[in-house]
Structure formats: C-alpha cells, structure tokens
Image (tube, rainbow, N blue to C red; front, side, top):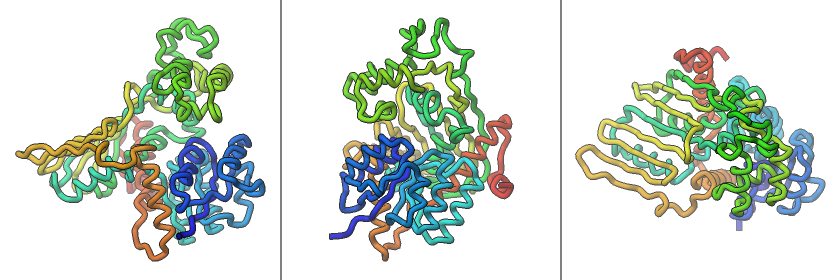
Amino acid sequence: MKKPITVAIAGLGNRGKDTYAQYQHIAPEDMKIVAVADIIREKVDIAKEEFNIPEEMCFNSAEEMLEQPKLADVMIIATQDRQHVGHAIPALEKGYHLLLEKPISPDLDECLRLLETAHKNNRIVTVCHVLRYTPFYSQIKKVLDEGTIGEIMSVQALENVMYWHQAHSFVRGNWKNDQETSPMILQKSCHDMDLFSWLINKKCLRVSSYGSLRHFNKENAPKGAALRCMDGCKAKENCPFDAEKIYVTNERTGIRHGKTDWPCNVLAQHPTEEKIYEAIKTGPYGKCVYACNNNVVDHQVVIGEFEGGATVDFTMCAFTSTGGRMIKIMGTNGDIIGNMETNTIRVCEFGKEPVIYDINKMAKDLSGHGGGDNKMLHDFFELLADENNQKSVLTSIDVSVQSHVMALAAEQSRLHNGKSIELDEFTANK
C-alpha cells in the first residue's frame, strides 16, 4: 500500500478547505493533511476536527506556518491573490512542492520571480487551471490533436459569469476591487487564456481588449434602493440581485432549499438560515450591489492573434441567466461547438454528419468545475508519488505564466482604449 503524500494547507476558504482538502475524503491513499493555517480561527478549528490535526500543527496565518521547519511534502496555497507569491517563495525555499491557487499574482514580475524560484529549487508547482483537467475540454483537446478539423483558424469563446455569481464574487465579494486582489480578466478568466494556449498549441503574439464597469455603480441604483437589502429597500421586490433572493429563497442557491455549499458556505461556516440572515444583515454580502466599493469590470472582450495567424475572440459577461462556458473552434476541415453548461460537444467535419459527444454519459465525475478539481488533484499526487514518473505537469507554472501575460496585457489594453499590446514587448518591459 502506497504512503499518502503529506499536505499543509495555507488558506481555508472555499478552495483551500471546501474543495482541495475534501480530496482526502475521496482518496486518503493519495493525500494526508498534517497542518493548516488561516487568519480566521473558526476555520482552523473546523479543519482541525474534520481532519484530526494536532493543535501544534494548527496556525493562525500562513506566515506563522512558514516560520516552522518543513511540515509536509506539499503546501497548498489558497490565500488571497496578492498573497500567493509572498507565501509561495518561502515555501519553495523550504523544499515544499506547491499546489497554487490561480492566479499566481496580478504582478507579472512576481509571476516571473516565482517561476525562477521553482526552477532554482527544483520543485513542482502546479497552478490550479482546473479546466484543462475536465472531461469536457479534454475531449475537445483529443479531437484537435487527432487533426479531425484540420488547422485551427479561429476560436470564439464566451464565459457566462451569471448575474448572481457576479454580484456574489465580484461586486460584494473578495474579488470586487482589483487594487485588493486582481483585475477580473485575470482572476476569473486566466482559465480561458490558459485554455486558448493549450488548445491552439501556439504562442499568443498580441491582444486587444475592451470592457468596463457599466452597471454595478451608484448611478444605476433603482429608485428607493437602500444601502442594505434588509434595511427596508423599496426596490427589493424587483431586484434580481437582492441578497435574500440569492442566499435564502433561490431554489438553486438558497439556504431555504438546503443549499449549504457555495455560495452560502462563503457567508457562514456550516450555514443555517439563521446564520445566513445574520450575515446579510451585517456583512458585505447583504450590501446593495449599487453601493459597494467595487471597481472590476462587469463585461469585457479580448481579441488575440496567435503564431501562424489563428485568432481568438473571447467575451466575459456578468449579464447572463446561466453559467458555464461556450466555445466554437473553426478549422480548415471542420468545426467544434461545445457548451460546458450542457456538457455537450458537436464535431462536424465538412461534408460529413456531425458527431455528438455527451460528456454527461462519458464521464465518471463531473463534480467541482466539471470534474476538473478532483482530476487535477489525482494527477498531481500521482506525479509526486512516483519518483520515476516522467509525465509532465499539465498546468505547471511554466505554462501558467503565459495565461497571466495574456490576461495582464489584455487589462493594459482595456485601460488604454483597446490598444494592441505585443506580448513579447509587454513581458520585456516588466
């Protein structure tokens, strides 16, 4: 029986505790959590009990944990965006392999410095671009690699952020302000930039981008809107962003319908209706979406040109009723149309009948980002467990940096009225 890889987790939020830590319950032969850290003691205590961690291995911050000698084989870093590199570099220097939540950093210099540190210390750094690991995108990649549609000429892609997800994460939530975290095109869509590089399998040369924060600001507050949803708001009945609707009464997301996972578990540990009401009455998730200290975009488009002339046009938009991603890849011999919300892929070679792949019937696990979370963790621990394994890291920091260059250059373009940004020049100037 193989010995599980030992893990220390820095950051016990929705990704660190509720996603990555849960893999121990699924595959205890792969990983064993031996140390945890978070600035919120309640989260530490819950993890301590759930994973039977000794008190001396429970820490009140990532910094406190990093002051100790090396505690495990791997450190999972799931702290906030601008903390990642500050935690990752000392972890690498202590000898940890890393599973690093995306984005690496909104500062390209930091991304490059972490890449250099990983190479210097000969450590594996897997960045959590989980979509590469999904059965959905894996099948698309397989079809492309088989040459079914010929040479890729153009890609159209859409990220449906979904109206309440935007309100939850990017208006009221942790990623509402790019000065505190990251530009939205990096935080939310570095996944997409990474996918384009992987699927096209060529380097992006230049990007241009447009977008803005158009709706979620005080100028668009409806008549009678209160500063908080539960403070007698006269616009509450017709407001789709009302916190009570999202977190309590909505059939898909509300605690009243037994939805105790995301997003409700962001508002309270072990959420109940009483806890959720207290959170929206007093915390940030109950503020009016037109009165939050938010500055990230609510819609953005990116146009990119790749080596060989392939082009990409990508749209990220908050104003959608459903979530999920859609993609159309057009090649010299056919096209591929994929909808991740329905998990279906249509492949049509020109002049032939289309072939439909129903991922719902093909995949064993579609939980957590369409099956990507658990597959990424499985592959990561499998790689570490076999010292002779020559398998490459699918989302290594080396490949991840390219997605960050694309996203940060796109943001630079957006801020300069869509100016075309040459990526080699952009990187060289950092």
